[in-house]
Length: 458
Image (spheres, rainbow, N blue to C red):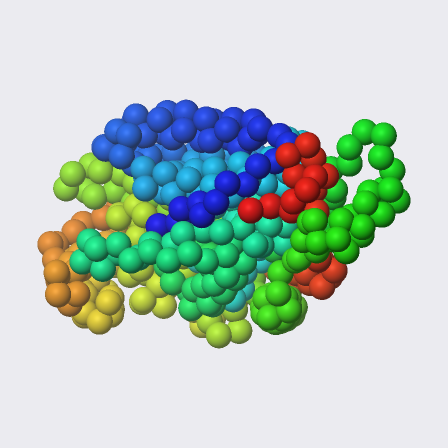
């Protein structure tokens, strides 16, 4: 799918802020991609962990977490990621900035990015606690805020959408209102379906903040020397004489859909706020070495003890992932029967088989470990003899090569993380409710500028 502008929309201001944001994103992408295995085609994995937003930092190191909120907004995974983001920012942001001005555009962009992070973190009780340890990168959340404000401000602007079937384009015109409501519904649905790889509720959060801020950033551009009362009189006369069209906002159907979606989102966050208070969250530092190669990898994973059981986040580091997955499958990361105990096992005779991706995998352990009062593994070290699991092109899994891994694992509980997460859920619900008020009150925008005094917009 490709979106093109369907008409010229002129405003009073040049898109200085949008141009500057695009330039900064491009320069940062060049910098982060130069150290990757595919320069200019993708950013390095190290840049994700160094500058990306990792949610649990908000609870363990608030300063680091706050800094990463901003740095992550300028990091992109690959060239496709940044090209699409910057194109959408230019397509909608440059038009919107033409009407609302530079300072309001910057305010909208930054606040939407912050709200995107808020929704992304608050959604973890619903979407999965493993997201607390996964780096989130990209300007999509901030750009989504631009789309939300654009929807309530310039819903009647025209766009051209093209779908490609067997490389043959099929194009048709539609309004920004239709495109954006479809796009927003997709983000909400995909988020609840937990489709991997994309932080959909970060998009939702940015868009909701855009809806909320729209009435504030799109106030009428008043010409010097004319009071609001005179302007309202001029508008009424010109509308009655049919010289300019009446101010038209989004349709009642679009308003109804937005309100229903926002009601569902706010309700979900209230439910998440109540359920997450019974969750205990740990951060575990894991170091794993392949003893045959001397290849050492380190990472941090999140352990969330919920009413349904233990949730263990994944890791992009293969050695770490193998160790954690096998310990968790063997009930050695969480086991209430081992609460307040110290364990020591040797191989042989300690041998077991665990199920990984539907495959029975052998595991032989030499380890010493200790557990807290809940039965969570708080400290462990040793060696593991196992085998990898290979994914075939068909999607089936089978046993791979033999592995001998040495590891160290230390877990610590994050104090009051469950309550802080609950508060973030309530804040997200409140933002959604306030956005509903903006949607109900929206009526479109009429701009009094030199170019648009006699017309609303094309």
